[in-house]
Length: 174
Ligand SMILES: CC(C)(COP(=O)(O)OP(=O)(O)OC[C@H]1O[C@@H](n2cnc3c(N)ncnc32)[C@H](O)[C@@H]1OP(=O)(O)O)[C@@H](O)C(=O)NCCC(=O)NCCS
Image (cartoon, rainbow, N blue to C red; front, side):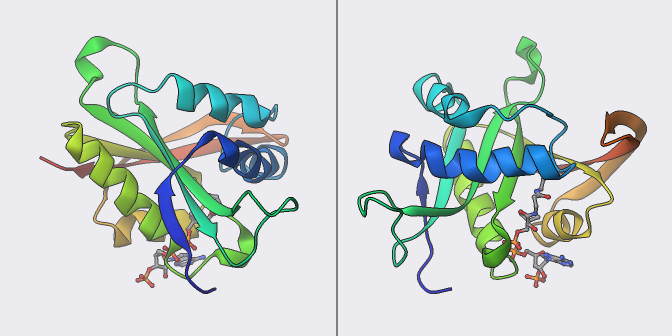
């Protein structure tokens, strides 16, 4: 893939982000949601983001979407509250999704770098990844990015008729 550009998301990216995320909801256990939230989720997130809340996209400028004006989103990542209570405010959870055809080319790593830079600028001190197991690609991505494995919970999710565990990854920015 040539010249994938990573930048903060804008509202016109919401459809492209939703296409990736909704497919992950319907066909994978990478997310524990079971109802596709559609573009509204991302429009809302972009409109109401606070300190440490960011959405970034990877776009392929050489492959515009149908109307030619909207760049084709091949991946996205976002940071959001790890837990809602006040003392967690310097910690963010991040998530990342890359379309199948764009994987294995550094896009996930570039998306993380963008999220991390924005979080650092906001004074965020810790980034957490929560990875449903098994997920060798996401485990490898986190380890490559300098996260350390920080424990697992077994059987805390139930999707597609099976029980799922999660592994926490932690990266300290401070
Ligand atoms: C996980 C995911 C985001 C990785 O994106 P990506 O763009 O392929 O990742 P990168 O190309 O930046 O790879 C980063 C590192 O992980 C490694 N990696 C990526 N996929 C891998 C795989 N399937 N098996 C082993 N290692 C893998 C790469 O080799 C690379 O390490 P390297 O630089 O030492 O070679 C992508 O596979 C994906 O979207 N998966 C489905 C959604 C998902 O599981 N998201 C994570 C939710 S927590």
